[in-house]
Length: 315
Image 1: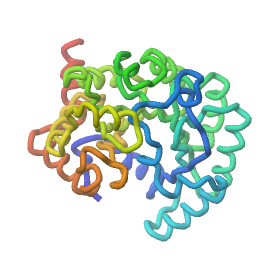
Image 2 (image 1 turned 135 degrees about the horizontal axis):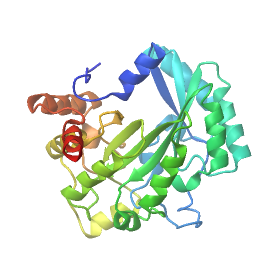
Image 3 (image 1 turned 90 degrees about the horizontal axis):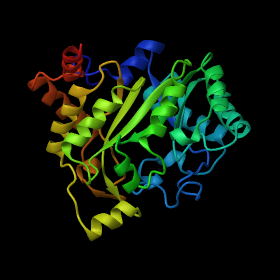
Image 4 (image 1 turned 180 degrees about the vertical axis):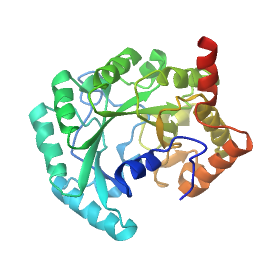
């Protein structure tokens, strides 16, 4: 395993230290949808979203949650010798249902004795205090993370990508989740064609103010059967090539709150769906992460270097 301990605060290392052994996330498809797909706030979903592009094969079939959990654990125990697992409710908005439905779905995953927690991907407009009270209660016995799609701090960008809510909604949802014993993860996308480099770095500054525990940094990629793919075909725009992303993600990490544990440094997609950038489908995770690490080491970059400088100037 590549050692990033001197470069950035690693989510994987955090889990290893917390549990004393390797912990794997297992993707779960619970059959949710989103309020910006079913017409509640919008239709068609986010312009970049093809759920198959980031959902592993094991989580695509609509099979009972208990079976998804058991089959994934059997595979990962055999391949990686993992001893504990986090059930990752991934596709669409996984709090977009009644509390009683959520209790049943999450309860099925937690029945397995080797599941130590939940990671729940959702949107800030799909959370309320009753659900947060339930997660707070669960977090007393399990490792519970709510992962919020942030994407950008700019309302104009959120409008363009058909997000269906503004940045203030995200800030409110994350703020209401904080101080409950629930871990909070934020997901940010860099490379929207309407945003400048300075705006993207501003998003990093804004997100660094939020009470997050974990963060996922994702370069924009274009996948088939999406509105973004149609827009790209009609009016091609720049996407980060490999060298550009390696350089830019280093700039992001340098400005990022050093307390955040970084879970992802790039996005990927299946080759049969990926349009651009091609390196997301052709390069291995080890190759990408090694290039980022070497860039950071060569330039004396580490997580929070410029965040700390900024804080010193403010103080």
